[in-house]
Each structure stands twice: as structure tokens, then as C-alpha cells.
Length: 120
Length: 453
Image (cartoon, chains in turn brown, blue):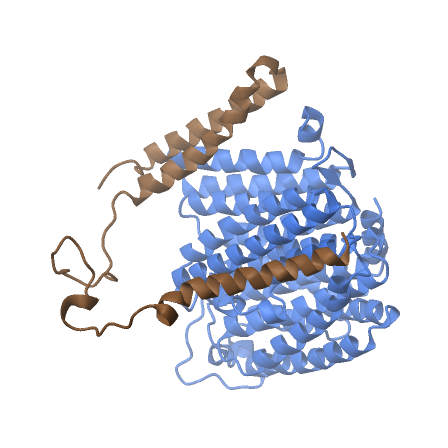
């Protein structure tokens, strides 16, 4: 890598910061400046007035499922490349992927036993 | 990864992974929490024994063990034992998290590749966030501190990956292959700043006092010894990529600044855990200075005795200090007043630890500081050395102030009843080595033998 690459990095940095700064503020700089009055500042939700502030806490019962879904989904992504080389699977590969899948099942059993899967 | 690597170099890590599964399985079967806790202790002891029996060697492209990784692995597992013994036996969650964090530290030690280092880094940190969030014994809102820790740790991970991408772009490899070009140097600096985050070095330390204060005392001991040793190992691996590069040359200055900053801020603290948090920052500064000197002297693994000895001594000193907080239940400096008269055996152990932390001559802390300063002197780092020495002098101020509270102040009329006994064994187990390691020079010979394995 020559010093020109460093220059390229700096140019890239300037472009990234400049463009994001511009786009983030373009509306304020170039857009019209309407007068805010009445309902204009209230979040629009199918014509209804909002009941509460959006920053209030609320109970989300399904967040655990969402987290579990992400975990198992990402783990299963590892099975994809493994399945693609099914023609040339050696013993070690089969054993390691069996262990991996077994661990997934173990964790699922653990969550089940701990009541994580119950919607309360 | 072949079976030989898994059963050989990775044997301690396999034991820890089996420990995680065993602990979770025992929790699933609703076993007694005390049994689960002893299962965790067994796994840690087993990992320590296997790590001690392992012989360094090359594994494959990702895994390899050198003297540095070998020695650090011993520090990691030993540093987890006070936490393992002192933590409350409640459920299987905390033991599984501790073992998971140790597994990450173990992977860090055997990594022969920058990508494996990242996996180790994340695996050691993620359980730590949860452990902090689960703490109930700290002085502050632990969830808030854990979220702060999580975001800072996430940012550090992102910096590391950015640096790794830059490194890979220029070096076309993720192995430890030096840093020949400007881009690779920038990559090393970015990855190194992630390591400085983990260590809590000066401009990147802001998360540290809150997290250390919000955690249970014994957990803070673990965070400040085991996880910090992990960050230091990462720092050394990165500094060794280009020992004469700009990042390695900046390290002594980071160390001196951290040392001074931690010492100055610790002076005015009333709450003990926050005081010890800043004190651990000051110690981290010393170690970073040592890493800088080590890099300036050529970054050979066998020459890392000063840093290794400091970490080993610090393991005993700091875990001991935090197990004192756990055993005595003392929260503020006012709680310490007159403790020397009320419970002499607890107070004397803490006094030994304070002297060692302050670096008073016959203790391990003195020898540790001396070795680091001598390395810095040999590397001609005079200005950072002077600043660090000034910091060490300042640090003596607050340790001696605590000693004064222990012995030369009368107990307030309504002295809080301190609970003693539970952690006394751990406290003395830490206090004795902290006192005698400094007068056992053969330990240095032994340590350099381990490092040169």
C-alpha cells in the first residue's frame, strides 16, 4: 500500500462525513420552513390522536421469542455452507455439525425447561 | 480444527465448555445451587490444571500456544477462583456466565490469528455485561452500569473489526504478520484502541468507575484482574505486530496518563469500591507502561516477565481487596474507622493488601512496580517513567489514608456491625502471596521459564 492509499482513505472519510452531514441537514438548509401550528407536530397515526407519549414503557411479552428467534436463526445460518458441501463431507465435519446441532437442541430444551417459551 | 488440537491445546477450553453445559444441565434438572457452584469451581480448577500441564506448540492456522498465552491462561483461571468461591449460590445462570467468560479468556490465550482474538474478546465480554447487570451488592444501579458497559464494549468491538478490516485489506492475511504499511499500522492502532477500552486506559476509561462500583465486590475483583489481563494480552499481541510502530510507541504515554489520572481521582473518593476502581485504573496504567516498555525492547515473549509478574501480584492484591469488601461489608471510608480494634484479623489482612497495592517495599506490589519502572528505564522512556512514578507517589496517599482510617481513627459512636467470616479464608489466601511474593526472587526465574516455554 502506498501513501496514495492513505490519501484515498482520507478522501473517503471526508466524502462520508460530508455527504452524511449534508443529507442529514439538507432539509433544514434547503427545504421550506412552514409555520408549525395546530396538529402539525403530532405523530400521524391513521388520523387518530396519540393516546400517550411514545417514550412510555410498555410490556413486550414477545421480546424473548424475538431474541430466541434471532439466536437460532443466526445459528442455523451456519448449517447452510455445511449443507452445500454435502458431497464431500468427511467424518470430522459430520461429527462437528452433529455436536453443534445437539448444542442447539440442548439450549432449546434449557429454555423450555426454564419457562422462557411460555407467554405470560 | 483437528481432534488433536481440540484435545491438546484446547483441552482447558473444552473443560470450560463442558462446564458451561454441565452447569446449565444441572440447573435444568433443578439441582442444589451449592452443587452447581462446586461444579463451576471444579471446572475452573480442572481448566487450570490442564492449562498448567499443556505444553506450548503450534496448532493450526487459528490456534497456537506460546509462552505468553500459556502464562496468561494461568492468570485468567486463577483470577476467577476468588469470584467462584465468594459468589452467592443462587442459580445456574451466574456460574454458566463466569465459565463462559473464562472460555473467552482461554480462547484469547490460544489465538494465533486476529479473528480468533476477536472471538475471544467478545466471548469474554458478553457474559461480563450480564454478570454486571445481575449484581445486587453494588452501590449503584447495576442495570444502568451494565448498559453503559455494553455500549462501550460494543463500540470497542466495532473499532476492533474496523481495524481488522483495514489490516486485512493491506496485509491480505489475518495471521500475526507484522504491519509493514501505513494502512496496517492504522489497523493496528484501531484494534489497539479497542484493547485500551477493555483495559480502561486514560481517554477510554469513562465506563470503568461506574461499572466497577455497580458490581458485586467479588465480581469487580474478577473484572479488574481476569478481564483486564485479557485486555493486556490483546494489547501485547497487537503491540508485537509492530513493536516500533506508532501505536506501540504511544503506549507508555497512555500508561503514564492512566496512572496519573486514576491516582488523582482516587484521592478524593469516599466510597471504597469507587476508590478501588480508580486505583485499579492506576494499576492498569502501570501495566500499559510496562507493555509499552516491553514493545520498545523488542516484544519477545520471554521478556514479558515484568508485565506477567505485575499481573500475578495484582491478581492477589486486588482480589484480596475486593474480597475484604465482600467479607466486611464495608461501603465507605467511614465504615473502616476503628476496624483495626474491632476485628483485628480482617483489618490486618486488608492492611497488608493496602501496603502491597501501594507498593511499599517488602511486598509483591513493590517488586511489581520496580520491575515495570526498570523496564521503562531500560527502554529509555524517561518522561513517562517520571509521570508514572509521580502517580505511584500520589497513589500511596490514598492507600495510607485508608490505613489511617483502619488504625488511627476512633470508631464512630454507632459503629456499623460488620459481617466477617465468610470471605476470611479467601482474604488471607490473597493477602499472604501479596506480602511474600515480593521477597521470593526465584519466582521471577520461574516465570521467565514459563514465558520462554
